[in-house]
Image (cartoon, rainbow, N blue to C red; front, side, top):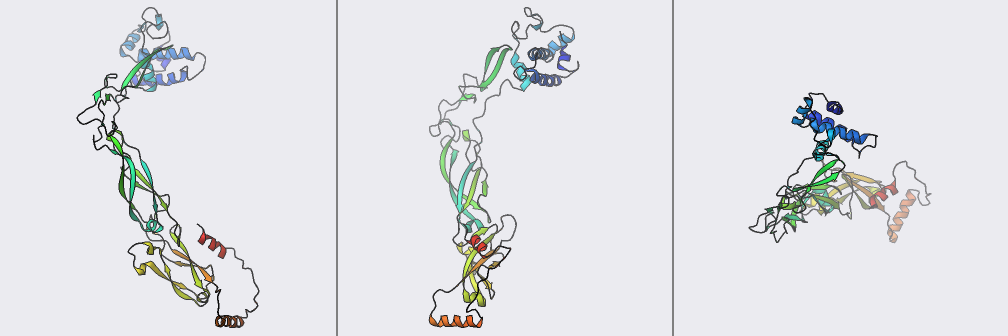
Length: 390
């Protein structure tokens, strides 16, 4: 008979934990379901026999004194191990517990569990996203049952101990195999692992301890948010079974397009039309700002003066610093970009037409030749495309 210490590869003064670790490693290596190595099944049995002796203090002491603690009659040296021919019916389930770290019983699970997180979507205007807002939202989630306060039982009733598992929440089954009796532990099918049964469930929640309800929550949206950003509301999600703690609520933001402004990061872009004469001579114009969409904004904040230099060409972009979107992380605001479209008059009276002819003669432009402008940067049509893009 092989030396059990040599089989497990441990010293004769090895501790119980060292013996268990050695067994787990070898059993996983030579288990017939894991390897098809020749002789693996015999090796696995030998490892199991060695562990069966050395993991038990009394059997180990008998073995150290020269005895055979597994001898038990009909099976000789393999007696009591629980393989075919064994007499003592050794509990192979204990070997699997040692191999996989299983527990003989998990104990009853609690009816009270944390709820799941919830996600809702909220649409904002561009001004609301830029400057922040507090908005009410309607949320349909599970809440604590108002009738039983989450207990799940009818008024005056209490859960009773399950008669199948006697409150343990688990049941044990025994199966015969070539390894012997294999015991497995599963959740009790009667109480579903709770250890108790609610014989008289609450009529409002049917024993769940929670019900569906629609409620209104005020959500504070910070300034500078973008589409796709989420606002996190702690413990405002689904209440868990048994009235357990609520999960979190996430509010995902969308932003509606604006008829005047387009957002580009922290900047705002807009297009303004300008008469040809004003572009040629230069002027000052008042431009609407996004603050005009905010209720209670003063007239001074709703508009900003824009200096247009003489000779401004159609498609030129002028910048108003600090009138864009507030930065979500950090201080300050982006800029307001204004792309100018110079308008050519289409309806002229005789006097106006004469004035333009005189101007053309003065500038020697009565018979101009068209020329193609070349530029390596983004030109007029590129800026127009960006300005009008959705």
